[in-house]
Image 1 (tube, rainbow, N blue to C red):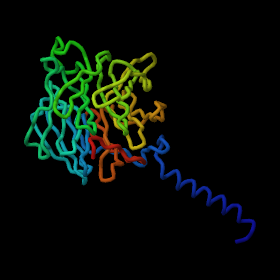
Image 2: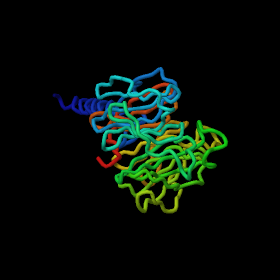
Image 3: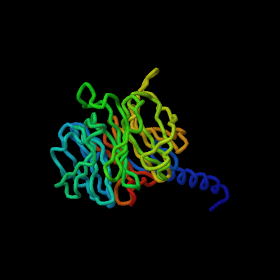
Image 4: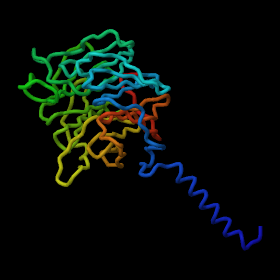
Length: 311
């Protein structure tokens, strides 16, 4: 190649290389997080989707609350109905036995068998009274369940008198842990289970609590503040997912807001519909399944999700 053409060739090579690099990134992707590809609608035409949770094989379960159904998306993307007449089941999580533990908004925490046919009650009362309307949950390695009990879909006056966060241990003993948050909604643990995150819907401040032992918390503090959809807003969080790095993904009116373990904002992932909850699933647990109003979306990520429950 003549020397006069060398600079042009090098420049062209640089442009091509830059183009290839750019093509491997999604517009607005968060470095080290994702998405790494297109956000796609996996399934739609539901009434209100919530509670995604993956089993050990990466199959994902989610609820359609008004229709009282739990659906399953298998590794090939096929949709099926897992269980019907779910008492308005909301948040889900899969335990080491393969049972799907569910927040039934009719007032109880239950576990469905791996085939969806059987149902056992984990907890349905505190201080002799039914829960308001259990919303979301997270399992710990001790076999316990942390769960939120806000006012959404609850009878009035509230059976518990206030909105709270509870812990049911492996034997089913229930302890009230938090009673001073406006509609605590989502709840998750850090990967090391030393921090419990609670995402209230009634304030923009998302909370964290040191875990001193199973079902025992220290004093809470503000973990982060959510970006608001409009000036002067005080919109809170809904559901959440946690990745293997400890990053926290909180659903909100603006999208899926991502924070590092220290509470620093990393960015927001936008969806065609307002997201309600999220969970990692798929064969490598690098696909984020996001329930958003009438649909479920898939979002390929750079980092894998954290799995709860001891396996």
